[in-house]
Image (tube, rainbow, N blue to C red):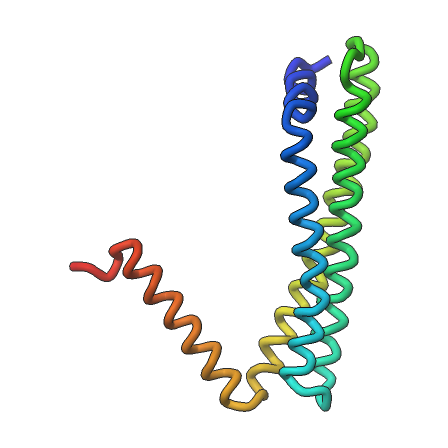
Amino acid sequence: MDPGATAHYAYVRGVWPELYAAFVVVLVAFLALTPLGLALRDRLGRAGQGSELVSAAFLAAAIVGMLATLVQIGSAQAITLESAGLDSAGLKTLASNDAIWTGVEDWLQRGFIIPAGLGTYWAGRAASSAPASIVVLGVKTRGRIYGQIVTATGLGAG
């Protein structure tokens, strides 16, 4: 058995409460993608196909992201509950099962990136044909944030 895996499982058991809280925050963030997609659809106008694609893409990203996080919660909880007190052979079995679930989690995370990326792309395309007030708002917001970053970091000085 790899001593790194033993240390890893001990670490996961030690930080489980914080890890669980972090997973809950991530679930809430994925859940927030749904109203974001609906708000973008309403803001960009319901007439175009792009606004419906944005809404559908963000809904799909939210569902896949929440599913990926739930699988990660289950995997971490299983490690926390099952790894305590296992001998070397038991830890080796747990590590092989954990490797299988890690692959599933990785592909679910990749499955989130595709609709989220498409939704962002379609939102950008729809915004380019949106009323000028939306585009100007985005430019002003980006300029203000960039100005704050330059001021805070001192990049604009000298």
